[in-house]
Figure (cartoon, rainbow, N blue to C red):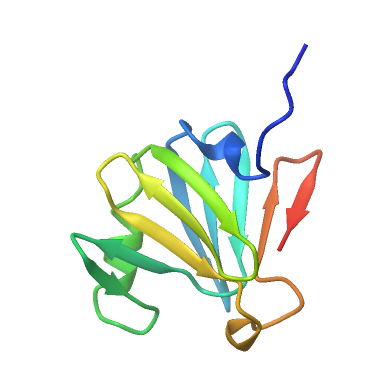
Length: 118
């Protein structure tokens, strides 16, 4: 019997980031096991206390450098943010604030059979 997840993002914890896919105006983070987090609101990357945003020179490299890293925590705080913490201490965050949204959803998590949106 499968125990339900405490949060919708819990299934990505412990699953290495397998790919970062840049698609026209959004980004997909693909985790082992077929889980895909689509970031319609573009994420930020925090490494060693420095936050890098879309448009900055290091953005792509820092986001792709998370490939192979394992999430140790993944949370969605109300209308604030989705935050994924990786084993190396780096973080990827997606704002859920209305003023940062670029569409109806800020993020979509899917595994092929279920979808969760925020």
